[in-house]
Length: 136
Image 1 (cartoon, rainbow, N blue to C red):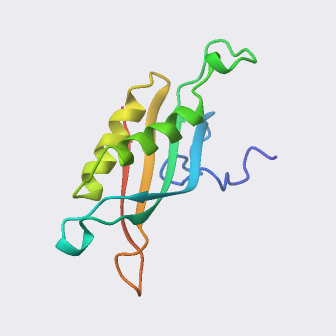
Image 2 (image 1 turned 180 degrees about the vertical axis):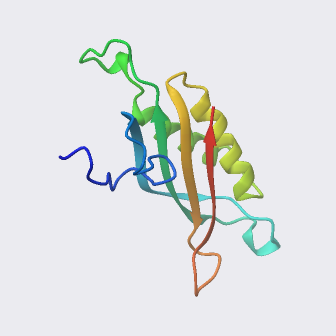
């Protein structure tokens, strides 16, 4: 891959095409999770499908070795999201997003992130959601 080609799997809010610095990122794309979420009465006592897209910008490792304990394991990010969603009813996507940001920044390797949460069943004619970009 040419270093000047766009990196389609890295969200442009994380990787600017004008930025020539080396970047490393992990991503979860299209993670579908049933969640107890919403403020309206009709949203309580049922689940709604959410779609998560998360890209985390990683600090460069000083030394990389071919062992899982030398990198941030994307399964820890995935399971962390599943645990947060499974912990009980959440009213707002913004609250859930803040908890995911806190989870990600609990890993010292994470320098920044881009998170999109989509609420797939809120309306029949569109998808609604919340999106945030944060840096440490």
